[in-house]
Length: 439
Image 1 (cartoon, helix red, strand yellow):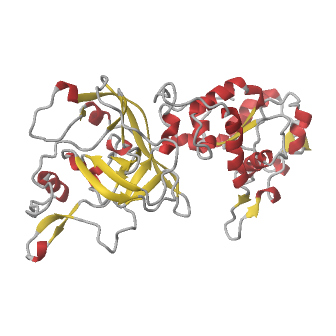
Image 2: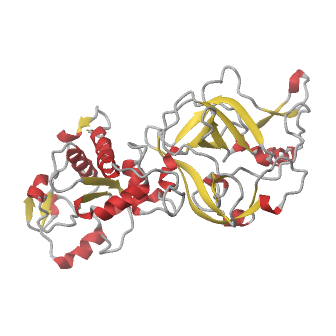
């Protein structure tokens, strides 16, 4: 391990002789763990190009996964060594909003091995959000060292939807290591980043000697939370027939009801519109009224390519203001299967989408026509994973947060059986690249 840090620091300083693991062989660079006989999970940043969502194919093709790595001086049996057949899917995104909060945070990669492994996959919590102060421990290969155990940690700050923090005081190089619930022994998360591992001191152990030493959390810092762990319960959309098995998961009898109610709860809670300089306003007091513009069929392609229209006064076409409630009056669609709302940036199209979803959830709009409504901000497609489907995308966007018992397959089945009773609100069509006639 000492050689690794020589390269990292660009110096030839030596480790202090009392530092843990400094003379052990570090032959790897991270940790992966089994989710199925031929499936393993790791952090995306370890197999992607730095700070991007782009896979590092050279690194993937040259990587071996070794099970039972307890001692670097022993030879490994063939059944312990595997290669990555392919990366089935992955996501890496760490994006903050204007207030400094993470609007998108994800760091995971699901890999298929070149053959089945004769080992037992780990048990994972893919349903409930882990509670604050839950006792934790971790197993992994920090900096590629043989297996290490870290205990006596707990969940600390626990407010983010996609990750939690812990105070295990593990090496920064423990990325991808599974973090276990000390009571249930289920995997609650996967460490993705931590504190600085080591640093150079000029007064090692008070002896006025320059050495590399392992940095530890001080008593003053303890309890603040330092390791950032990807929550596994938010990866529940991976559980479907194509990816992770549902063999031990009971089929829900009330899945259709949950699929209807889960988005409703979310839309009801989004009942205000934030303003830059003033307090937020109730959504039912501020929204954009529709204007119906009569257009010839031959103008559709041109309109689609422009993606927007000018102000009311600049449009030379017949104009007829309409109310939302009249679009699907008495549950009838009047031949309108698809409606395209165009307008200049900032005019209020997204507020309109939010308003429609909120009013439907409150039972005030189109309740006779639609049993389920999916409000889809299309900008979130920018962070769709490689194996994403319509059902997995809708599930994690609209259903997963409010229901611990639903799965993506439940959404897929519902859409097949109730297509005529479902409304999709696609918010931000101009933010994604689509072909004409693709809607």
